[in-house]
Image 1 (tube, protein in one colour):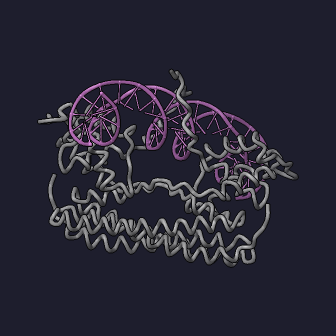
Image 2: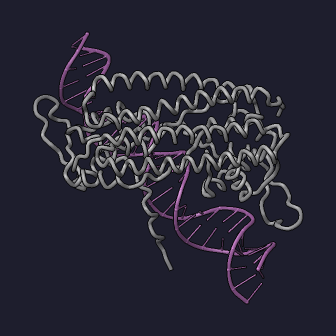
Length: 192
Length: 192
DNA sequence: AATTGCATGTAAGGAGTTACATGATTAA
DNA sequence: TTAATCATGTAACTCCTTACATGCAATT
């Protein structure tokens, strides 16, 4: 007889590992970490402050990051550096195969139910195509910037690869939208 | 002075709308709805029983579905049908532009940190390519089945479009994986 | 008779977002 | 001086998954 069931087996957050990885180039405070995330992996990963600060505090308690002194101005800000234990934890996580997270796509859901209102869904698809093209162009521009500004950095090929992923995904999405718009044109208009 | 802050503005679940949509072909119980979801939109949307049953109960209280009698065996099962109000609610949701949900991609995160252990990350990418090709093939087979078995159904073009999305995404993913494997080969091996 | 599948739920807890609260520092 | 930005956190709440509990129906 069990009063308390076993704790569920740790659906683990990836937030701490992202923070550890973002500390690789050098120490930073929480605010800076947030910006590093936005400007480097922001197109496929985000963290909110509500996640970030508690995770950072936990990392410190675990000895995976340690506070370092901040010279000069802004000395109040809590700057953290990754520790050797933190590097080990990060490496161990990187080496673990990614757990496939179930996809959820609201646009596809609406396309699936397109019979309910074909014209409205077609408008969603058109908007998605425009967004995809715009976003793909932005990623391309960002790619140029990174290649120019970070030439020689050892991590550059990997960073570019993540941008390529985004660009390829946007291309594929835009192309699918065009095919889908044609396909939805023939849907019978039915009323509720 | 506020003791109780305003309730956050309803990050709304899409579960009820999926259920309403799945009731369009006809009445079903919760168990059947789960299976309809798995076999139709399962490749881009899933619901667990823990979500499904409470949502279904709420829909009934709201008058968007109503219980209908089940003739014959399995008469204990609670079968539901969508109501006119339910159709209206579904249509209203379908017509609302999809809210873009922030993507999160753990594979890309590991690729971004590939410098930490390039060989392990390359193995992840290779595995992803294989999975993508396998899954793409499965979607193609499913597409053939649907075209053959559901020919003439008014919703068929839209249903096929969602399968096409999955297939195109898998193609793009597999192609990106191959490019990325080549790009990661040149990453310098550095130790912790 | 026993096992598998059908069927309906609840409990507990993690993950994550949004909004709020608070203050220091810098720039106009 | 005032506004914007930097900076750190907490509170409340939603979403969702996993695990558990329970029982009936059909199959072997």
